[in-house]
Image 1 (cartoon, rainbow, N blue to C red):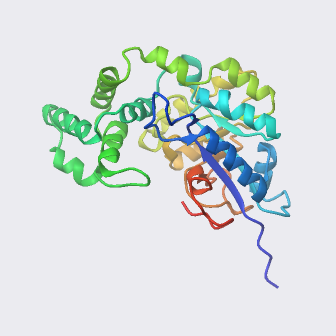
Image 2: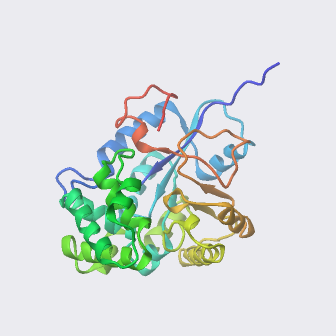
Length: 323
């Protein structure tokens, strides 16, 4: 007799949740805070919203499900999560999993990914930014011609145009580290702010805020130390970044025993998995866009669905979400 399949289990991924329209940054890619409330209404009507510990047990396959269930995860440690998400979840009796990079939370260091977000959200023409990057490529000795980079990276992807993706990929990983860092810093200073430290202070949760969330019953996990593409690093450098990220737990009064992890950019490889196993990581979350298969899905390779595949951003029928 065929086994009855378990009800659907989804891990939902959020990044920016903030007032966007009419703000200083109307071009930032995120979820309007009012839409977050609307989405929670939908999720409450459609799923059992699990607390983090129950969710991990369900993913392991040892928590029986009588109805579809989900868990809410929030990446990058934005102050938005403290000011907007945390009070909304508390008011509704829900708990989430939050993944701040340690360098942002503790050192008030701007992540390159966020410098790129705000460069693109600041009103600059992505095509013009791409042209500036091409000029820098031509001037840098030993690099391929810009046409070679464009052939690989100038392509529409997800919700972004080819011009936007080209800027993102070139400044995220395609160029040598020294040139990427210099270009990103120069463009951020020219278009957004000459004081990245103060900008970071406003952008990210601090240790006291994360401690408050932890003490209220939300789970704080690791998102690495420097928010880097781990799968593009040596095994030794991966271990160093992940191990350094664990200082976050002491700073907020939490234990690192059985910590959870979220792969920056969704990037990982076998060396990453081996490192997390050695450090006794309980669960690690990817950006692979599908539902969880309880008991089968590896606990270090848990898939997640983006907020944008659920109402109100998408008018999908219940349990027919696709990324």
